[in-house]
Image 1 (spheres, rainbow, N blue to C red):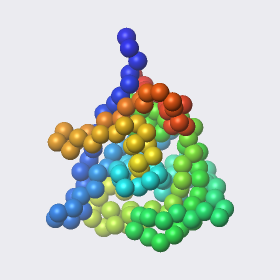
Image 2: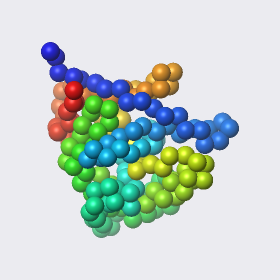
Image 3: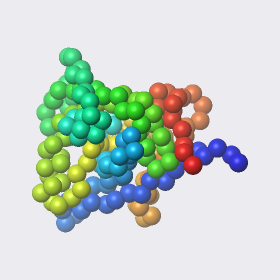
Image 4: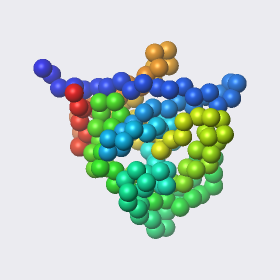
Length: 161
C-alpha cells in the first residue's frame, strides 16, 4: 500500500456579517480539539497565548526585541512555544515551535457573534508548505506532503492512517 500523501480537512464557514465570513478548521493539539481561523493573508501560523498555555499547561517564552504586526492591531509582543503535536486532518506536525500572540480581541469578537472561539490562526507558512487548496464548494481544505527538499515542517511531518 503506498504511503498517504494528502488529507482533507473540513472547513466551517463562519458568517460574521451579511456579506462576510471567516473560515475555520478543526485541529488537535496533543489530542485536544480546537479551532483555527484559516487566514491566507497571515504570514505565520500563530496561537493565542492564553489558550495555548492552558492547553499545554506550560508558559510560552517571550521573544526579546521582536514585535509582530497584523490581525487588525499595531505591534504586539511575540512569544514562542513548542507544540508537541499539531494535527490537521490526518497530517501530524510534531515538535514544532510556533509564535504566540494575544488573540483575545479576535475571540471577543467571535464571542459577541455567538461564534466558536479559536486557539489560533492557520497561516501561509503551513498552507503554502503543504500545497493547500481551499475547496469552497465542497467545504474542505486539501493539504499535501511536498516533494523534494523539505523544510522544517515536512522534515518531521507525517500522515496517520
